[in-house]
Amino acid sequence: MLGYILKKFLYGLAVLLGVVSVVFILFNVLPGDPARMTLGQRADVQSLEAVRKEFGLDRSKPAQFFLYLNDLSPVGLHGADADQQQKYHYVKLFAVGKDAVALKYPYLRRSYQTKRDVTTILSETIPNTFILALTAMIFATVIGVFLGVVSAVHKDTWIDKAANGFAILGISAPSFFAGIIIAWLFGFVLSDYTGLNMSGSLYSYDPFRGEVMTWKNLWLPMVTLGLRPLAIIVQLTRSAMLDVLSQDYIRTARAKGLGSNAIIYKHALKNAMNPVITAISGWFASLLAGSFFVEYIFGYNGLGRITVFALEMSDFPVVMGSILFIAFVFVVINILVDVLYAFVDPRVKLA
Image (cartoon, rainbow, N blue to C red; front, top):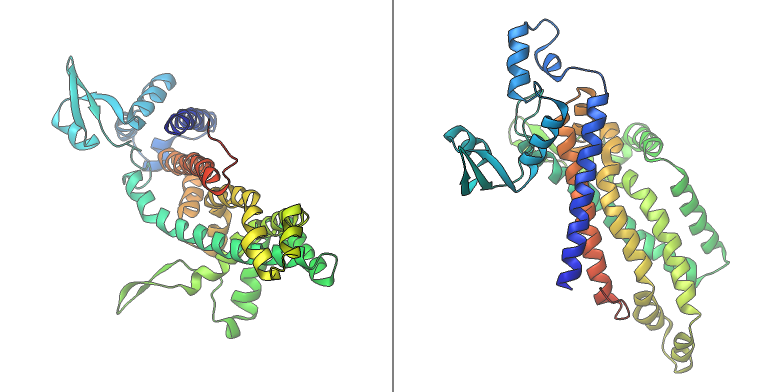
């Protein structure tokens, strides 16, 4: 198993390298001068040159790319002076001339606009997005599995047709469209009854208590983000349950007099969960990326919202940092799901 995980980890590194390459190329194709966007249109030449030198924008494109990879790598070549040590917080391994091969955390650089460390910016927003994605996935999984089981047990009845109709509606509605409708309906038209706001973040500022959690601002973006995976989970659960319920061992269990609930939840559902686990794992990572427009619509302060703002301002380090984080989550979740398969289904062998 360790060999399999190591192999998948190496594949993941190749994926991350590809992500860095593509985003770097795209940002260098797009028009715009980060130095001028940082200082404004009236900045003098000396100030612009100083900013370009600070961010390494005065070097050739290949040199900028390899310098960025050196910053991202946990083992990099950096100067041995005090400024470099303070900047990268590294542990020196051995010297190479005036430089040092060092062990460090990946350095995501600083924002062009705010000049804050990208790691700090992400650390402030990732927890909000993670809570949104996690609650949306829990909502989609619980409701989706329940509706899928009920639909399979009541095949070809009005219950089955209603569940399938709801699933088709959920798949058909894009998140940005569903978000606008949900925000308008429950946050504006019915706000007197729901008590919900059209927009707002998980944390809000209270003049007497300071920063407080506002859980009601989570409901509408959570439902919006969870609609599409919910629809997929309903259909996958229904299909898998129908297949399992037609197996010989289920008929044997019925012949032995086992109750319907024991057959459905103890025997059938467990063996029907493999495709559902795949959907849950893939969708959870996708929700982190798919939260971009949902967070923007609801004014929810998370990873997606700050990435959209960074794209508008051509803030390359922030965009690269957020995309790398999402890619890393995809890689880790794929490895964890493959390992989870081996525990859920003994027939799956890791090689």
